[in-house]
Image (cartoon, rainbow, N blue to C red):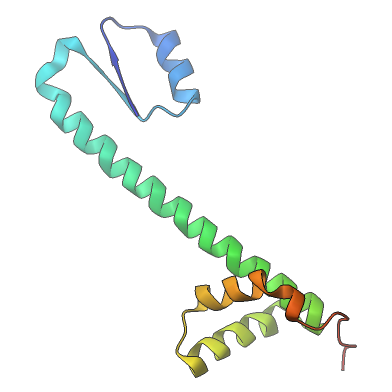
Length: 115
């Protein structure tokens, strides 16, 4: 989101930044609008990419947690399970993590006792 302002207003811009505004432009620098818009679009794309990466990471972490609890294994072994299954069946790790999270009721009800 870009805010178009007619006159400098630091308090307004401070509040706008808290509410998610990525940039501001003013009537005074009309020639600068396109470059400001280009910069904001690049930053927003980076922001969305990071947000997506965090979401993917969170899904994998949830799947590992489910596997750890259900199979009484540590984090490294849970990740190895996902990775090995991904390689063996030529499926994306993220797809497997989603399947574990979505289908966790199909996993053993009681954790295995540690060996």
